[in-house]
Image 1 (cartoon, helix red, strand yellow):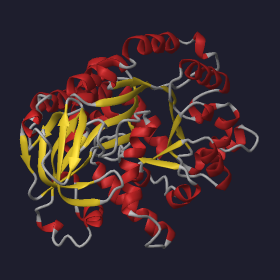
Image 2 (cartoon, one colour; image 1 turned 45 degrees about the vertical axis):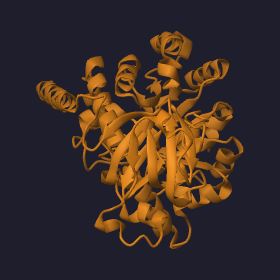
Image 3 (cartoon, one colour; image 1 turned 180 degrees about the horizontal axis):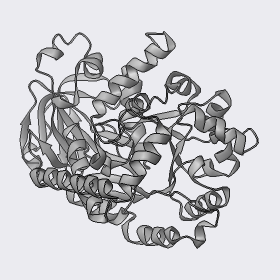
Length: 434
């Protein structure tokens, strides 16, 4: 595709007007102020008047099939939300339910300009199938919650992971990557954690984990582990010697932040979920000032309740300012980096997340002709505080159009919605009868 005379957000997160961008195969082949040589080679010409082209978004923390629970577990703090609502519901979810929940989540992500996500859930083979069918990318890990204190090598999940890595890691031209997982400090035991860390290190794979999401989690961890916070506890086990994305990090102190920085941990910030569950406000400005790599996630749909990452970008900007009483504490460039390049790097996708020649053609087109975009005094501030995911009119993953003007070329959206509705209704009936 050749984007003609279009506004862009370039690789340095600067706005540039009247640019030409061409994609060839799965890569960005040309960016410039004039028409590329031999323009016919790029196929369709897309007229860029009133449009903005930017990197697509990378969701650094999700539980995508939880679209099945959207609107179900409401007005509860985290532990009650998990134990009283989410876990009983999830016990009823079948692998086929996971497929349809995942597929609908993919449709929602691309509708709002997202192309890749780090997903922590179950039935990894079915989730991978849905991602491949949709044309998106994902770093998938099988949720690991240890019910008893024994070695990871003695658990069925160990062999399951061996199969996932063998069959799925690098599948679909690298669109599917397998990460290892530790759900959290409070749902695992030290021996199993150490085993998972060892296996991930031996295989050279990444790891996803929840860390310091609530104040009570931190307090109880200190009681269990001789005063260690979750960050310090996991560091003592060697977790952060493996490339890690730590979701939440709401209740971290200066010592924790130093550990996260020194080990190059990616912090996946989930502002909508953290507020909705009453968990608090992560110290994002302190993390950024310390040099920690911050990326952005939606979390699951029982605690957000949508995959509109433009909403999370908006919240990241506002909450950073409001929680510090400093309106200049964060810039649009920092927020955009969290939602694009940093998210891609948290997934180990070095060739993604920037509008640069040679990078993967993961792109979204935003309609900037509407009234909320006028005037364009500063386009980056318009993008962050005036725009919305509903302004996205096209999304490309590896150069393939996966959403355009209300249609999903790779997904039967009506069937996906019907399947999810019917499957949620079935599970609610089963819960009421149990």
